[in-house]
Length: 142
Image 1 (tube, helix red, strand yellow):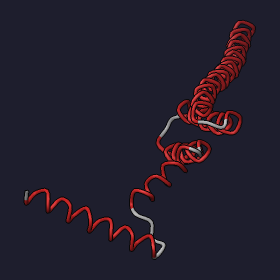
Image 2: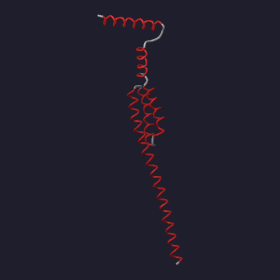
Image 3: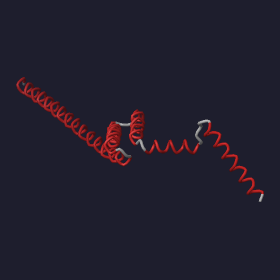
Image 4: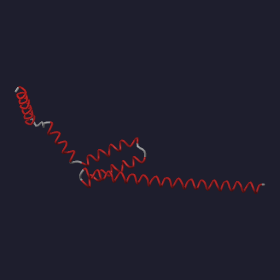
């Protein structure tokens, strides 16, 4: 009986407190939480932007591949959030952007490797010709 009385006293006190807060224009905590959650659910673009910024700031310790994949995912998430207008669109955009960033990275690495191969071939040819000229000079000088 005492526990029920205490429970009702607490309930009445909280209702009076909430009533006073509403009269003063101060929303209760549940109202604040619900408002915050509704804003978070309705703004996938904001989530994508925050994710993009965190990836950008975290890029200081990433290698080139990770930076390109992260940048692609961030741009894809923003694009997906804008086009799709929901979290699912942002996630799909992030996946597609990350894959695109990886493909760009591999293409860039292939181009760098081909340029290095061409440079090494030219250097090898120069050294071969130089050695051939030196051999010919030695043969004609004898």
